[in-house]
Length: 278
Image 1 (cartoon, rainbow, N blue to C red):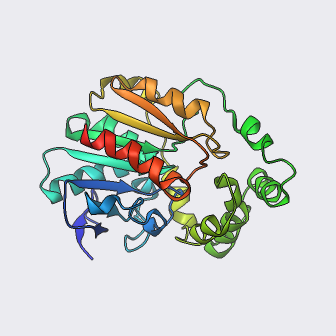
Image 2 (spheres, rainbow, N blue to C red; image 1 turned 45 degrees about the horizontal axis):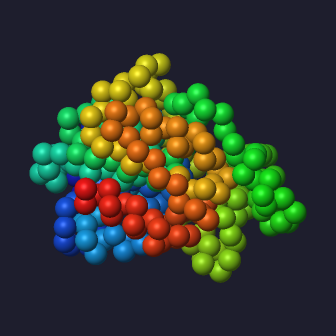
């Protein structure tokens, strides 16, 4: 597995998926979920080379000695070192869910290194004033006992102290992340374990208070992809996030929850391909 040296001289790892086309650095969410759940983003690796980072404490990359090195704000420096390791003048970054926090932190700190960025179903209420509409979206599935059980587990929180308990809780809540809970969705939910320690480290250091304002300086094009039925991040705040970037645009994937490349792969590819090829 290829590797590079992180900001504190730690050896960090990444996967290479696909061998042709422009390289893309791909960041998983979770937070701290193994990136295997991303697959190749509905076949994107056939036209692009995906550089799939193993973030701190996930997969082959070890936890940092100092917890703050594992925060999404500080891991931005790791991504910059990965860009330089790859020999790229500027880089395309594609990120999902909690991984978008790292992508945005990278864009804010290394603006000139960013070519363009895709944010897939990002959490956004920490940056925008738009109120969450999660409750409104979740109402559409009231009466579905599987969904209601998942949403109850989300509201209760993990309340665990080890990886086994944390992963069990993630499986309890998994149905809430999809618009439908069929065989395809159930199989996907089983892919990629979470690291509790890495998840805690991810949020161990707060970004500057002017974080949102710094996004005004990001000149690179930004695509924000929202799931029309995403009961995890909502819809309205995700769409509003695009307005924080000078060249930001939002696109909504209909009949999709939090994982559009799994739920609506054709619509997902149409959106991301058009943006990357523009």
